[in-house]
Image (cartoon, rainbow, N blue to C red; front, side, top):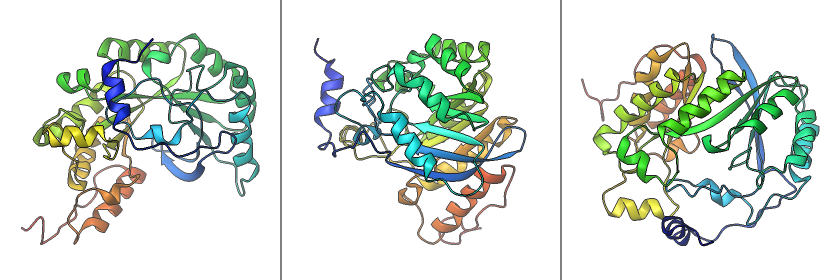
Amino acid sequence: MSAPAADRRIRALRSPKPAVDPWRAHGSILEEERRPGGCVERALTIFLAGAECSFTCSFCDLWQWTLAGPTPPGALPRQIGGVLQALEGPWPDRLKLYNASNFFDRRAVPPEDLPAIAGLAARFAGVTVESHARTIGPATATFADRLDGRLEVAVGLETVHPTAAARLNKRLDPARFDAAARFLRDHGIDLRVFVLLGAPYVPAAESVEWTVRSAAYAVERGAAHVSIIPVRGGNGELERLQALGHFAVPTLTQLEAALDRCAGLSPAVVTADLWDAHRLPACAACRDARLDRLRLLNRAGGPQPPVLCPRCSPA
């Protein structure tokens, strides 16, 4: 069965995919993360190598970190075990397993590997995985039951802008997202949500407003943590949409404004994804100060003194 036309167009515009070793994780980071209630956890994120997501979203740049075929059985436990074996110092509170795909897609995470993965995660109080709302179901609950700690599933809502949501090629509507959120709540599983800043088809002047609305929508449906992700170009499709006037690269001040406006969504935690944030369009005179302020907002929350820049925000 051939792929839909939109999938074929998006994939045809991509650059060649780099070779990926299925037996080694791409890397890992250890960082402090604010959680609901004000506590701060030490979280270890492992970036796993596995099968590409079966959904071909127009904004995605994660495909380049994935395999051309299914994840081989045994590969993910080996990747996780290798990172954990190299850990030094106090054991982290949370393990985040990000596979640039869907954890509950059998092609991305072989079901026979789930017991081994749960065993490797036994020392963590919390475990976070990522998965499309359409993949959440009985296998999610079964995996949660295998864990000693509490499971959190990160789900991409992206945007509630009606035109944009329908044209992202994500195959997700509000009803499907709501059903996934209810399923997680009913099974005692925490919900983390990704929302986009600068989603294609959202007018640039309305970008911050729709990001805030999307974050509020997620919190209303039980999200304890919302991460704002600035859309990053480079996949070919976004450049095509930009040429047509359907996409504008978000700016650093827009990211700052969106995070500031989400401060009222407590007790949920809303943070900004700062991966490559230094590349966002910004005033050279205050870029570093704004990045520092965003890091402080992520870590501490609450109102923080604004950055006053005579070049871009004169009195």
